[in-house]
Image 1: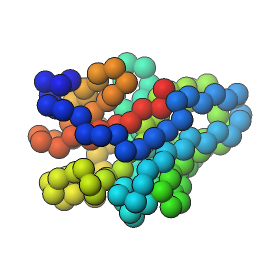
Image 2: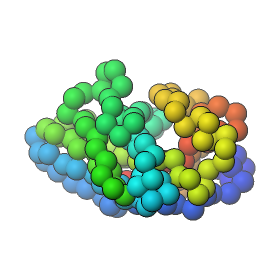
Image 3: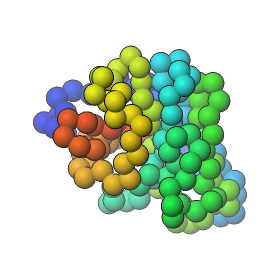
Length: 148
């Protein structure tokens, strides 16, 4: 992926390394940032990535569900952190979940201008180890931070 991107920006959001649950259980995945991103009033978006598939938009703008996403998925944000809650866990919910937020200290003006766009199907996905990036349009990359 280095050929696509040149270099990686510093990761500024953190999630717990793994999370387990049983069918029917309520589980919450947390995403912690700082005042430059989540705490700075920037939106948080959540993606679900099933094996061998591109990440799918699950929650956008902190708490909004795109059409077709089951209502057992919900998002919230408070201070420097955000959460994705699955109420009534299903076997098909086993996946990698990514949180994403704009960061005032890392991104360029171009990314800032595009920040309000909701892209449900990125057209290029690059992966290297635990890292994933989506090319939303030429020159605009979305970096996804994994929960593995």
